[in-house]
Length: 107
Image (cartoon, rainbow, N blue to C red; front, side):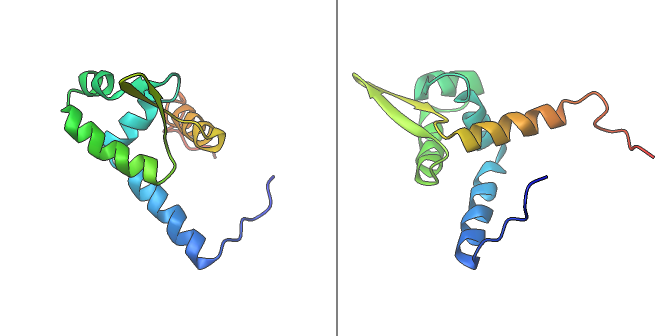
């Protein structure tokens, strides 16, 4: 078991803002689209069925919060979850919500 985490007020605010950003379904879909491999704006827009400008707007917020990293390749920019903490948390939470007995209560 891990030790209790103690954060100062400023870091608690930053953590809450990070969770707030991820609580938007579109932004969460964008992050999840960048988990396994780098993705370009157009690819994400097509996959999610939204405009490239809306994807770009969300990407600006996600990059500012250090949830995604950008990698320019020629004229295109590819986005990826570059932080292992973010990757691990999201894959663990995805595993959690897809567990077969997620709705059952032990007792």
